[in-house]
Length: 553
Image 1 (cartoon, one colour):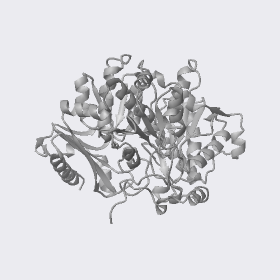
Image 2: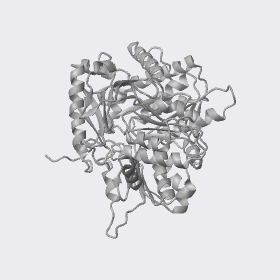
Image 3: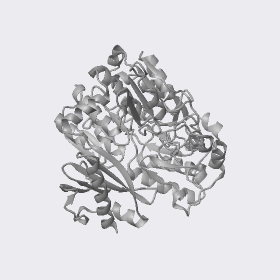
Image 4: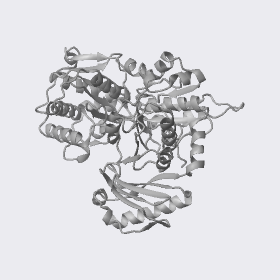
């Protein structure tokens, strides 16, 4: 049977919203099942009420744990809270408000009763803390979102006063305390009715949209975009950026069209992802099929827009579509963005480094070398970029999953969480300033540095084997060559900061692979890249699997 990837969802693909919301309130998790306990991944706690992994007890317990964590850390400023368009996000935000108000926490919710992109919340935290008097209480925040996950999922993420994702010390403590509260039947959780919480003196409002949109000229050359008349097509993909894009176009007088302003908790308008699931992944050609089709050149050879962009549900990821190149591979766009920014940001620290995750393309390494900039390679997770973005020492941080942020024109911090709106607008600035599309500029980079071929595959592994992979040392790998080339590095710690990568990376002159255990499935993931073509990449993948299987057997 032919795959339906890239085709519009059918009724049988849609989640039952009524059942989803009923389960949120009615289903209690079985704490004997690890999948139903609180667990923070790289982007908070995620799950589905239909699977008893994201239900009201989880949110009540997590929020109380965050309150207690704030107390331990001496965080007494306001807590910003925002939500995306997933069906479970509003009830989860309401549950959190009931606990926060009962604990006397000052909370700021969206003044427009709308949706809040993750970068807008990060921006709000940083702006508040920057403008506060020395020694004044610091703000933090909660984002209620499972990012690009399917419509049946919910997510809950904590951002401390640095504005970015909480580190593992914080999330580990919060998760442990939340599970203790669940085990104790939520005794210890303070809570008041929602109406009382909304009317509490400690509950206030904040205009996230204006704070973010009005500050964009400090980080982007919007004059160049406006003067060049770049035709922008922005697709919110049913997510939290829906109202932001229209305001960006209007307030900054850009030639911008909101391609699809529809918000639907079932995402019935979406085209199916590679596995025939609805997933708002703006880096996926299948999920982005509608926008890609709209950008196809017409009979006269022109496309609807000079640049078209997509965002996931909380707008922390970006997808870039050009008339000549279609949907850009996230790695390719990161390379172009880095090359452009470090050549066109005169206010940045001349010594600022380029930050990337260890599974991002090595063309970034070569671009950084061409710029004369130091490359800092960190483990997977945007939290590793936070210190550099705050200090300006790392003015750009990006990861292979289409997430990045960079500093303002003067080198000061913009956001310390991924900003898909920012990177989407940057594509228009690049087009306006250079006169070339990002995909054309990428071709120029490959002419200079070589054209890599990149892919990710999964390999079966038991829980025990995944555990062993996550604890490997470089000494466990005895191989000296990979796909015909001498191995130049065997890494179990990121070279940029010495942090464990939770797996293995093996590097040669023209190729590399990284293997990391999946947190949710009985597989490990093999990321691999070659500058010697598709056949060589296949050889790298095959030998990588054999090497890893031999080590974890």
